[in-house]
Amino acid sequence: MDSQSLDTVFSALSDPTRRGLLARLAEGEQNVVQLTAAFDISQPAISRHIRILDEAGLVRREKRGRETFVMAQTEAAQGAAAWLDHYVRFWSQHFDRMDDILSRQQEDRNDR
Image 1 (cartoon, rainbow, N blue to C red):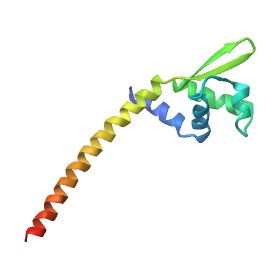
Image 2 (image 1 turned 120 degrees about the vertical axis):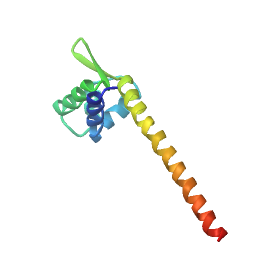
Image 3 (image 1 turned 90 degrees about the vertical axis):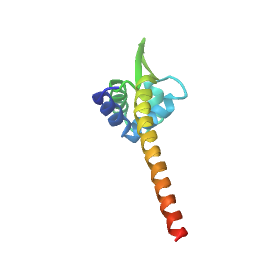
Image 4 (image 1 turned 90 degrees about the horizontal axis):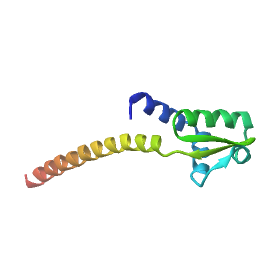
């Protein structure tokens, strides 16, 4: 995943309303009216949040007749999760090494 895509995903995820929308969509697709009813904000505001999520690749919108349905998309989230996982492993390894060094230093002090 390229840097610009990561920036877009993390920016989209930075808003609590958008995270709430994704949590609802994890249960299955919903139309915009259903999503709006779940939040204490206007339908145009919900639509703006959905547009941002769509631009980040986190949701997909589908027009069916007069209704717009929204469903979660996993590819962008998986790319961001893979990026995060890389750094979790990196820091875990470094912390493990630090623990080893500190343990050896403590043992050396105890042996004196």
